[in-house]
Length: 524
Image (tube, rainbow, N blue to C red):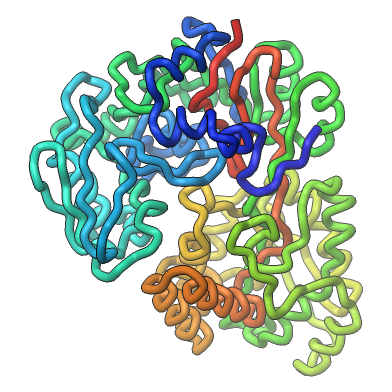
């Protein structure tokens, strides 16, 4: 068993050495492709065990579920995409990585021979249509804020488009993949049908998707990119029950599973390959900042100092997490140790409550019912009760809890989250919770504060910078969040993934939810 740092794996290291990078990221010649597949059974089926149920649409305009996003890695493409394992951008539908002389205009040419799964050519008009439907406020796309730097997209010729930005934006290549290219004619003809069984350009086609059962893919024989399918088809078995998922791997029914239960890590590692990837995925505390007692920042900070994170992580999560010392985990390339680091300090917590005029206070701690979250909630309650919070636990299904949150019935809540599936830069991760959206306006209710105005200014300034200046603004933003703590991480999870190394070639775990089988095949 190996513990792998954020976004780094055996495959990433191999790519860094040059061989796999030249094949997957920089362009794959016929000779290299032949070498890469010598040990691969191209007629095989990849069987996988997925930890989550299927819900929502596959349409990349708004697909946000753990399963649909991971499926779209294999079936849909942007001009540039982020590698699911390394989180580095690579040219997907673009013929090469986009560049710009001024950071404003980008001329992007499509790769030669690109066609959709139905055989129709990908055109510049499809690219413009795909971008405009995301940018259109009426579409309510989840990804609109991720590409808000774009002013307009225009057709240059049949296979070339021009992007014009509102300002020079250093993260263009990291973000442009938020726009997946879809066939205009098919989407306009029947958007609902497209969302159930979309047509993309990726190395695999989506054949069927049955909630709580399975998702079936087959190879796209007309794929012209650098990451062709190395299996004839894939079957993703949707196995939400953790014991059943482990049994499926042990019995050989599936070749890989995500989200190995922490209690089973050692047993699974004895019979299969297992890696624990340090993820951004976090457990956060979120406060109603407009209602007592958490309208007082000192009470929010007291809550944070009260928690015995060593016990939460050691006992509740069997050491499969790292205590937060910033908004980002320490393994993230943009990590900055925050101004406030909330190590367990009961005396400081009591002093802060006393400053706020409280020796004790009754609170209701809401929690989602995810298995590992349920395990740590009583430990957190114990820590809080020890410093003067008289804590009542309210543990419930995530959807129902957020209904109460949105209705203003929350005092404080702990819940999991991981927007890194959409991107890995600090701005996209902070904008998810601190952008102009439902989180600060309706959930933790901080949008009218001076702190929020200051944070918004810092994030907006950072968008227009690059390099050390940009990092400095992000550092200020992370410091501010650590002091104000309207919503803040308690820990960052490790994600155990297991697979049969005897069967799979080229497999590596991803540092977020999901499994990736790009450049992965079944051994002969």
